Amino acid sequence: MGKRIITSLLVSLFVSISLFADGYIDKQTYVYSVKDGSSLKLDRYYLKDDEVVTVKVTPCIVFMFGGGFAAGERDGEQYVDYFRKLVERGYQVVSIDYRLGMKNIGDGSQIDPMRFAALLTNSITMAVEDLFDATTFVYNHAEDWNIQKDEIITNGSSAGAVAVLHGEYAICNNSKLAERLPQGFNYAGTIAFAGAIFSTSGDLKWQTAPSPIQMFHGDADRNVPFDKTEMLQVGLYGSKHIAKQLQELNTPYYFYKIENAAHEIAERPMKENINEICSFIDKLIIGKGNLIINTGEMEIGKPELKKDFDLMDYIKANFGG
Image (cartoon, rainbow, N blue to C red; front, side, top):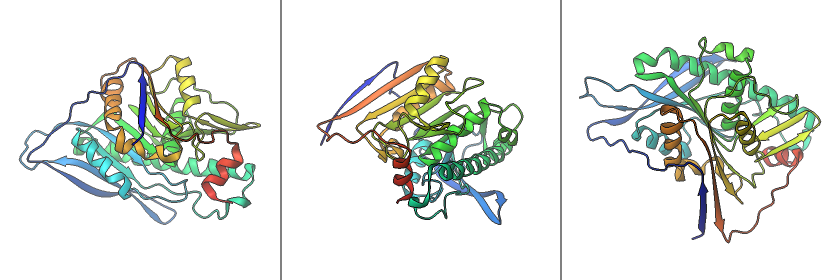
C-alpha cells in the first residue's frame, strides 16, 4: 500500500457525525421539468423519522453526475453511497438529471477544436439551464422539505463539476441564464471533483466574487485540465487556475491538489474525502469562515504520470479518436 504525504493550510478535519437510531434514509423522485419531450427527474435523499414532531431544517446539496456530457445517471451506483454518507452527516442531497449535449457526437477524431468549442458551449449551457431549473424546483419546495434556502450547495463530478462551476460563474457575471433562478439567489457554496470553466473569450473574469468553492483535482488529469489549456481565445481553466484567481480576489476557497493523479479524482473524494467535504461545508459555508485553504497530497513511490496536455489531448481523452 502506497504512503501519502498530506500538507495543508488552515485545515480542520474534525467533523461531527450525525448518528440516528430511529430514522432512516428515504429517497423520493420528482419530475422537475420536461424538455425536448423528455422528463428531467431529481432524487431527494433525506433522513426520515416518523416519530419526530419537530423536523430540523438542513442544508441541501444539489449533485450533478459525470460522463463527459455524453453519458451518466443521477443514481449511478458510484454516487449513492456518497449521498447516504452526506445524509448521515446531517445534509439533504438532491441528485438531478440534465440533458447530455455530447451524447450523439460520435468519434472524437472528427472533432476539430472549433467544433469542439461550439459543442461544449452548447452542452454546458443546457446543463447549467437544467441545474438552475432544478435549483428553483428545490427552492420552491424548501419549506415542505425542511431545507434551509440560503444553504443550498452545488456539487458535481467531472462534467457535473464543470456544470456547477459554470453555474456559479454565470451568477457572478450576471448571465441571462441566472434569471432562471429566484431573484437575488446564489448558492451557498460549490464543490467540484475534477472540474473546469470553459471560455471562448479569453481568461476568466469575475464581476463579483463567488460564494466559497471547494475543488479536488489531480495534476495529471488528461480529461479535464488541472491548470489550463488555451488556443487563441478558447480556453479550459481548471482548478489550479481558478484557485489562483480566487486567491487574487481574496475570497474564501478550499483547493485540494492530488499530485501525480489523473481523472480518478472525479470520483475518489466521494470515498476518501468525506471529512474534508463536510469540514468545508461546516467551516466555510455554514460557519462563514473567511478562509483560504490549500491542501496537497502525494503518494510516495507512484510512477510519474504525463502532465503536459494540449486541447486535442483533452478532446481525444473524452471522445476517442
